Image 1 (cartoon, rainbow, N blue to C red):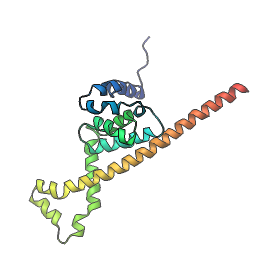
Image 2: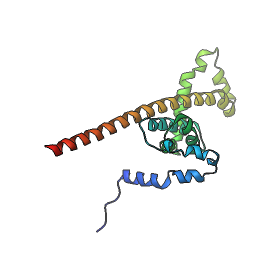
Image 3: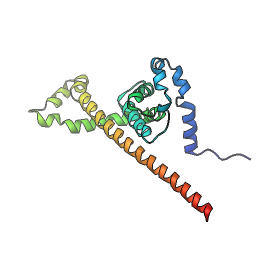
Image 4: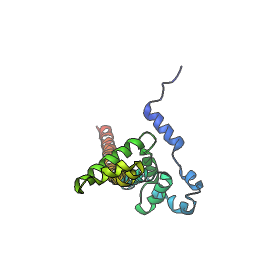
Amino acid sequence: MASAAPTLWQRAVAWGRRNLPTRESMEQNRLLRPVAHRVLAPELWRFTRRSVPRGVALGMITGILCPVAQIPLSAVLALPVRANVPTAALTTLITNPLTTPPLWVAAYWIGRWILHLDDHLPGAPVADAANLGWVQWLLSEAGPATAIGLLIITAVFAIGGFLLSALGWRLWIARKWRHRHDHRHGQLH
């Protein structure tokens, strides 16, 4: 008799177990070796109501703003902010080949909307620079607009991730307490 196919959640959990870094793999990482004794401190690997939201926010920041070495960077930065290392590492995966292009396009449009360069300067210097070529356009409009947009998106995602994970943690704990309370009172009656 064949067993049922795993659900999407079960496959995601199995993928995470196979691919996310463990304390042992991080201990062997040559980039982390100089700070491994600090990054691998047990308190950074415990899931607590304070460390998990910090890990989510840190993972959002490093995931969006750092194009390479996101997981090692989040692990190193987890030390000063006392964030949960696995949560920070997992959250950096918000950026991947599927999500990065839309994120950068959104950052450009948000930055362009925020800056309004052509609206505040006489003439149309940004539009004139764009007519000179794509390199000039990149340096005069796209670069600053994308940078500002990325900073705004990062702030919104980090704050939102922090608040949602803190709320999720509270709801999870409340559910556990309610279940424990119901279980105890159900046995007494």
